[in-house]
Amino acid sequence: MNRITILLVTVVTMIMMTTACKKDDDANNPNTSVPDPAGTITSNISENTYINFYETEQHYIGRLLWAKPDNFYLEGGNNFYISICNMGRMNGLGNITHIPTSGFSAPTYNSSKEIACEAGHGYVIKIEKPTFAKTYYARLYVVEPIVSTTGGIMGAKVKYQYPFENVGEMPLDKNLSNATPFTWQKIGTSKGSGLDAFGLEWTSNNTTYAQIVKGTATKLVSLGSHAWTAITTQAALKTAINYSSDMVLYAGVTLIDTNSLYDDVLGVVNNETYYMIHITNGKVASEGSINIEITGEYKK
Image (cartoon, rainbow, N blue to C red; front, side, top):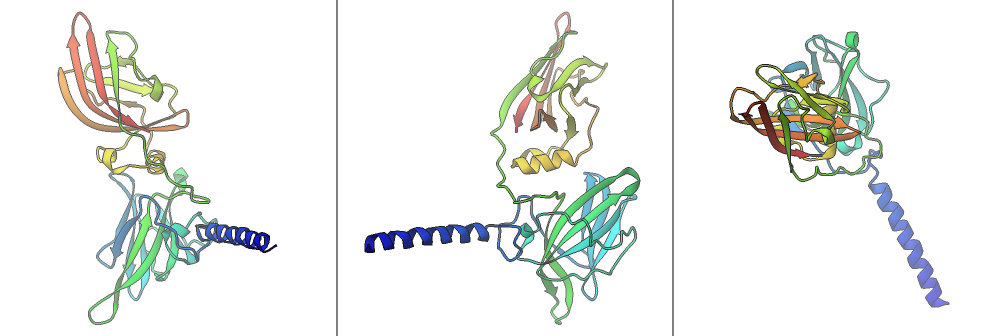
C-alpha cells in the first residue's frame, strides 16, 4: 500500500508540474514572462530620438516619439494616419499576442500627445491609409523611463517589433533552411529552366535585361541585399514578404555584360511556401543565339 500511495503522489505531482509549466509558458497571460519574439528591437525614445515606420525601405509612413511630461508623440506620414492602444500592464513584448479591435486613440496625421507612456505597459500601434485600405501594426513594450542627471524623466527605453500580426499562442519560430544553389538558364527563344520550384517563369527578355515573371507564384518582391543575412527565420521571411509591394517582374540581370556579379534578394510565395532568392551571377554567351545563365542561392 505504501508503494502504491507513493506512486500515486508522484504521478499527481508530475501532472501538477506539467500543468504549471504549461501555464507559465502561456504568452497570452500578461503575468507570464516569455522570451522576446524574433525581430525585437530595443530603442530609446525622447524628444530628439524616435522610431520611424516604413512601408518599403524608402517610403516613410509615420513615427513614434516621446514628449514631456511622459507621453507618446505620434506623427503620420505620406497620407498615413497613426494611433495607439494601451494593452495594460504585462511582463514583456512577447505578451502582446493579438491586435485589438477597439481602444485605439483617435487617428492623427500631425501630432498627438494624449497617450501616457507607462513603464511596464504594452502597446499596439496602428498605421493606416484609409483611402487605399492599407493598415500596418507594431507592438511595443515600455521597459523603463530614462531619467536625467537632475532627476527628471527625459524619455523611455522601449522594445518593439514592426510589422506585427496576430500571433495567437506564439508558435515556436523555425530557422530558414540552409542556402541551396540554383541555376536558371535560357537558351535562345526557349523557355527558361530551373524556375518551376519557385513558381517563376522566364519566357522573354527586352533588349537590355532578362525578364523574370510570376507563373504559379502568388507574390514576387524585392527584399534588399541586407535581407539575405538579416532574415534568419521562417516567420521573419513571411512577414517581410507579406509587407513588401508585389512586383510585376524582376529585370535586374543585364544582357549587355557577359559576366556580371549581383547582390539582389527576391522574396517569392509559391504553393504557400516562402522563398528567399539571392541572385549573385549572370552570364551571357552568343553562339548563334543568346544563351543566359543566372545563378545564386535560396532559402525557405
